[in-house]
Image 1 (cartoon, helix red, strand yellow):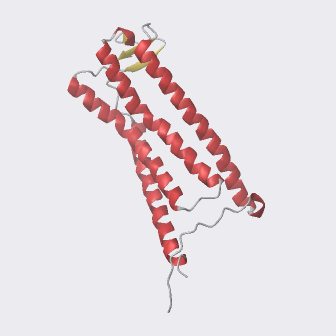
Image 2 (cartoon, one colour):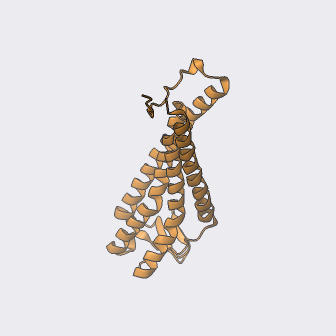
Length: 200
């Protein structure tokens, strides 16, 4: 009686000495990028924490907000010191800050995971495709959060900073969609490869 067994055992990662020069360059470069995105993730988390602390507790004149944006170290005449705002408005803008800038930290985190996998030899895998898709999702989230926060703030009457539409957001959204689709294609390609090679 013939048996068909589908195997899902990933091949072990080859040691560096068994790789071609091009593969070694990819692994070494990916390792450096993993460290870079680890630093950027940590830096973005620290900046967010400092920003939130300043928004909650700083009462000086160096953090200002107005219709043209938020300024550190001074600003135009139409701005007000953030510390002079009512506590409810300050709390709302703390929430807005979290919503708008958390995607940046999560983007760096996903890129760290992606290049960490590449550094270990996991390139054309389902996991790599899924992680690349997450990079695309966080790019799209970064692009859309200014608009969503603008709509919420204008509906509640809390809006001060009205500078929400930027060309960079449109570019980030389009790039995010492309990266997400590429991640989906990688996953489908991996599944096709498994279907073709996973039967004995």
